[in-house]
Image (cartoon, rainbow, N blue to C red; front, side, top):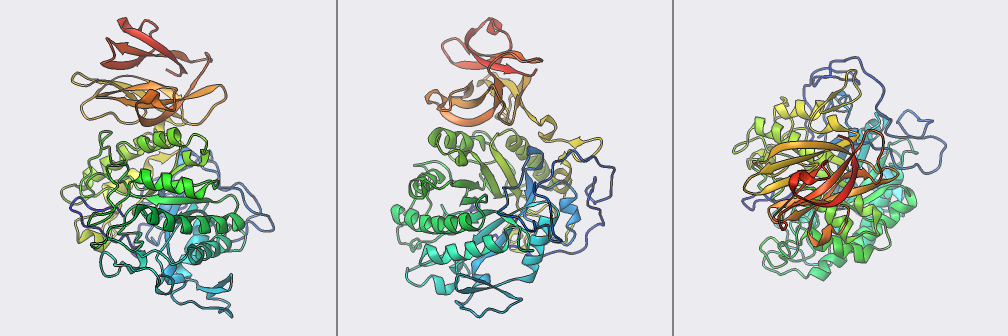
Length: 556
């Protein structure tokens, strides 16, 4: 988890709270799970047939990657919530589960392994937690994609490198001695949970947690010892590459991701000598790209608000990348790594919005809806794991209540927002917070006298008033070009140039057709004066201003 605005960090441990929940069915159309009439227009998550009782595919080779659609990009850290119907029945696309290596292999143990409680893999025995094992199988059977966050180094695997953890209990965040030991653990997970062995499937593997922060990935520095950036990157790449290669053997179609918190820009957050050392996400991604090639690496990002205790975020949050300017990450990746298409596929594997003071339950609910709008409005983001289902008492003691339910398991307003925003599985459909525009994204033109115009499929800066809107396709279409949003001082411009014409990328906004199609209109980029402002318009005369270029053809 990212650090609080005060500099305090909080352990994002997986709570085991369950407790009383309202009853519900698997086709829940309301937040308490009461059954509504449903339509079967939501596509299945997994394509292959011949499922066994655990949702696994029997008598088949390696599985393809699960099918995802934007309607089901919402996921959840479920905190072992007892009533799974309340999650799967509200059209969730996935869940994330913490898989702590030090629990699976606290001691280095070679075969023979206990036949029912241990898993043998590559000459090692791994202890299976029954509740974790059952949960993965159950979520898979329900058609949800499981993301596994693999972290937590056991004591025996971190003996050769001096490591001073940030606090007692953080020893598991000391980097492993070798990438091979960690890779073995992830390989075991990839084989056991490949969807073919009766235990369900993990399709996404997150390699350690928030590795650009020394608090969470400690390579033997911090606590008064300056970090060496090259060593930091080398040590992480050893884990990533070893895990990737193991997963590629066991599940060729699975995705392997580098985990990053919201300190994005370089050189702003390259602070290897700070009290709590940081590397920018830019530096870690670039370093991994050089060390992992030609592997198809991917990014797991945590776009928490600038101040974790507040619900405020904005397109102006740079050099952080948050819910407010999440397109910046997508735009930078496409500009920087145009020949690495896997980098265009982004997963937001942990983030949440506070409900406690100085925020409030109402502000949390509103912030969650706004975060959905920005994420739905950003082509390439395929998974948004909300953290978490239930408030964690360790977090709430520090003023952080991210849960959709409180520590007494009572639902907050944000629960209804999360549960009902994407209900395209109902008849009639119930859609909000950006999901109502799918399969399109809405390009909105707005204006603020002091800043000029803004055009985006994400929310504009505060104070802008809407003038007009058009629809672009969220997914690639034949004969269409991807448009990008770029920053130009206090306003923005739209371009088909992935390099943003030398401006700061703010992210892809959707596909426009290159030629006129039935039901479309031409969309132009217009300039005011010498370029103090730009706007988009369907008027070839640019409403009396200067027409700079045709952007494409869009749906009005």
